[in-house]
Image 1 (cartoon, helix red, strand yellow):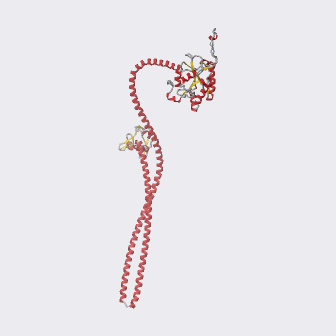
Image 2 (tube, helix red, strand yellow):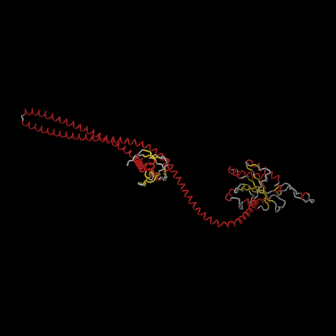
Amino acid sequence: MSYAVLHIMKASGSCTAIVRHIERSTQPDNAHPELRHLNRDDFIKYPDGVDGLGEAIQHRLDHAGLTRKIGKNQVLALNILLSSDGDALRRLADEGRLDDWAESSVLWAKETFGEENVVGAHLHMDEQTPHLHVTVVPIVTTERKKKTSESNAKKHYRTKSKDGPRLSANDIMTRENLIRFQDTYAEAMERFGLERGIRGSEARHVDQHEYYRQCQIKKKDLEQDVAGLSAEKEKLDTETQSLEKRKKELERGNRWMDKTFAETKAANAEMSRQNSELEKRKSELVKENSSLAATNTTLSDEKRQLEADKKKVTDEIADIKVDKSKLIDERSVCVKETEAAQKEKETALREAAEAKAQRDSNRKDALSNLANRFTGSKTKKLESELAERREEIKTLKERADETAKTHRSRIWDLQQQLDRQKEQHDSIVRGHKETEDLIQRFFPGAIAALPAIRDCIEVRMSDSQITALLDGKPRSFKTGSTLYDPNEEKNVDVGNVEVQIKRDPTDDNNYRLHLGGKRMFQWFKEKWQSLKQTVKRGFGIR
């Protein structure tokens, strides 16, 4: 719990100094001007015609009914400082109870010293710890205590009334009264969470004048120290100038290094982030590639089936064209037969007309009936055959048109499927191309290193070996190490052979695996040729 702080100071003379401090007519060193608007001085209303604390003190003295003359060094007012620790008062301010605390403190002062004697109350919020200055004019009506010399004096003079008002700070600031003030003020402050200070504590309040006096002493000591250090400063100035020059050079170097380090750090962070994203994208692409591989296989099968269907439809169209050509030929033959029959009909009619004119009427009727029967029967037969041919041609034409329409629809569907497959294939190719462009953009050497990585995989190197070789530095295999030759399908001893990934001399855009300074397959080829020559020499073969 925090303590309720009560401190009483005597203000002698004209009270000018304490009034200037309380009313802020001068700015104290430990006060903050920007917080002055938070101060309050409206707890006590001055009498009419009174302006300021100094006049309020004098007004009380003039109207107190004093009969004794006020001495030059007599205490005219008491400055009562009421406060607590900063945390407690800030807590009250946060709770909105600071004004209530100040008003309760002023009420306690009125009840303790008399309302008419309390002439001013000022709340200061512009210092480190908020506090309240209550100004009390020490008017008392109790009998004055006689000094020991006065009691022992032989002569006694006539005294004034003992019950009249008197100006006496000593009668108020007795030891008993000071203890009572502490007790009663603590009781009034209990509801604000403040308690009485420890009885008999050796802690002492340092008043404003003592505080400023100590500051002046410290200031003089510091000035002496500064004078003593001036000689050392002059001595160090020369060294400082040279060091400043060196410092500036180092600072320029440090700024450049800091800038380079920051840029490098930022670049590394960005590369790490991009690597992470690319790894994630790579995993996704691997999954997509696996899915697309299966899809490609299915699409390839469908494409082959569609090509077979297309071929089949093409053959059917060719057959239809052959059938159509045959139908056209048959139609031509039918047309020719019909024309021949028509000509025969016309010839028969003409002959019948001539015969009818030459024969007699009896024979004419018989011959005419006979001719009519013969000619009508053959014509009807030809016309019937012609109608049947025409109907067959019409039916075949309708069948050919329907087949062609079906084939066109089937070809259209097949073409749509092929277009969709081509578009999907192009989309997949574009996705792979975009991924390849990203890799080439952010990892320029990655695409160029792929042929070398494939070489390493083909000779069955481990992932750790491949990763180590990607830095482009030459290394040598340990004794007993082997690599797989894909051409001979055998392992080959490569102990102590230099291995390195470097640019292909025939293609500067790609990197390839080199063994003993040569391309991998060239080195394997020469290795086997050397081995064969060794074997031949062992058997005496040239």
